[in-house]
Length: 235
Length: 121
Image 1 (tube, rainbow over the protein chains, first blue to last red):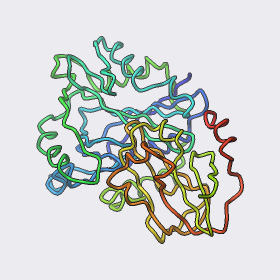
Image 2 (image 1 turned 180 degrees about the horizontal axis):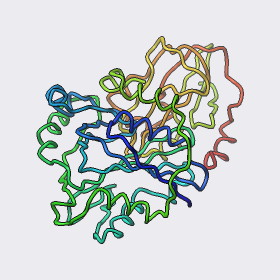
Image 3 (image 1 turned 60 degrees about the vertical axis):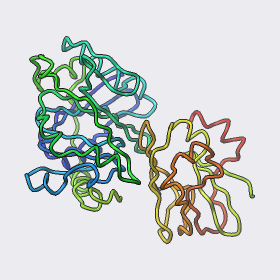
């Protein structure tokens, strides 16, 4: 399996989600693309969640936050510059060769951290979740993406996300409150930049040498930015 | 009940008197794992052969549903809104949508052919 990587130059969630989807076009059989990106002050809900059940949306937006909806499933998360997102984009048949679990465990090992996989899709360090993940399929491609909490503002998570409300509402995917923690609060002196480097080292990835199709990227960005997608989940 | 046909995108179709019914195959529900949510079009919408007409969120992933035929949606199985797990229990009696269409499109497989090819699709 060969890998290419792209590091986003934006912290805008709509730009990044669009770029992630567009980068799927650059995968090939035996070639996966690793996309490393950060969203500043953003709540991202899952494909089938109700924004208003998941967070105090109006307060969050008023305070300067942004709300986005991703294509993959699962629960709501809070992103800021203390969190690193990574996407493993590949052909479906290559999925096993570049699985989320093995890659993230490899990255943790590279960083000198002892991480465990709990068999339920969570990566734990000292019994606490430091990374979450989800996937979606698009034609013959698959996007496996996840988060790594390095130094995220934990107060914001509890201030704006509302898993208790999520639990009560009907007809949407419910978020489950997790015992999450930051690598920094576990006493590790690890920077976002160091984690990014570890991804590149572990995969032996080259920088992706491709020109992004600006028109398609812009169209995807408009889609991710649209209220009908964010608030109604309609495509 | 007329015979079921299968698409390469793991959708089954059967048709009676100008109405086609779509559903997901048993192989599809098995691969998806526990189905958590289904997004379907509304009655009156049109679907186009080869294009997505909805998506399914399972415990593992989100996958698009690809229409095996074109036509106007006449009926949607709204029971799946509250009980998406019906697709795991019995994907053949728990259909997704019905559309108005003139007969079956070409390129579909018989049950025998689908079962022999499903793993390579």
